Image (cartoon, rainbow, N blue to C red; front, side, top):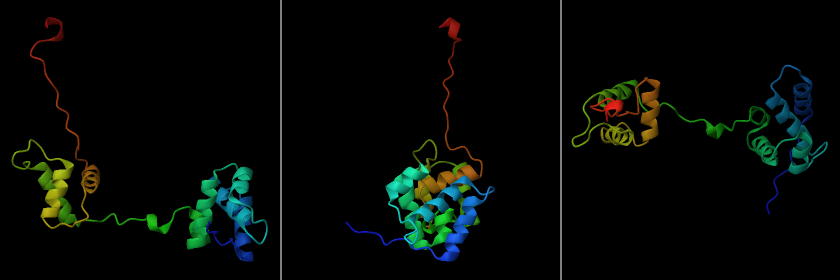
Length: 165
């Protein structure tokens, strides 16, 4: 089994983490992450993930994740708890392309269909050359941002009132 390298904090990093731990105004999640890093430091304690998790009353998976963030991206990313690879490019389309897609949604559906579906609208966008990355989730998010309903309910209206059936 491959062992990960130990976490070695510098004196400045250790002092920064200790300031966070004793602070009364910091977020509890930030304090927990700082405590995990302090307990994981090989210069002071160097505890195993299960021991750190047991003392701090959290999951060993959380401890391993914070350690991984520290090893890969440094102390700032480990304290934030968010890995940089999670950030996504949300702007897949330009505003003009968004307007074209909205006009398609509001317009007539494809031939042979009763209404536009998210998948058919995404396929139409790809055919129009708006990009290969456009999926039905991209279309759903776009419609949600612009306040368009994405689910249509069809109501059955009885010809007779209920009490006369």
